[in-house]
Length: 166
Image (cartoon, rainbow, N blue to C red; front, side, top):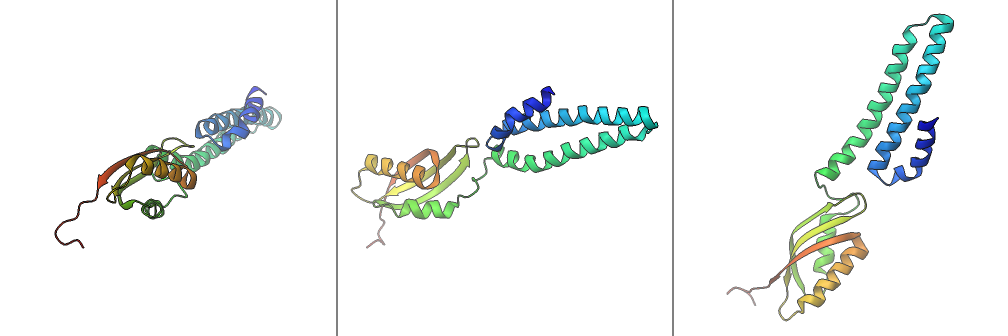
């Protein structure tokens, strides 16, 4: 009963947190194991079906294995600092370069700090005569509002024209 109660407590939060989801699945598995023991024990006592213990174990193990297979890719993506789902790096670069005063954006890296916070690191080439501090504030606000990037590290470079520029 305690595992069922704890699973019910963690269910709503399990949708937005991998850690809470792991706790929820742990409690569900423990509850299933308890119910499985009662069912298998009853069948063994009533009918002598010893095989039900192994069958119940395989059913619960299959459930745990299935849940693990569905959760592991998300965890690996987060730990390997993969680009968050729903964010295209080229779209972010285009948005940065469309801001007045930006000549170019390169070395753009976007990853998840955790399940709710995204981070960006980028080199931004400034056009001549641009106020870097004002542009930085504008870029950070745009990145937050359009792409939910909570933490951004912007390295600014001045545009340098060589002999072939017009």
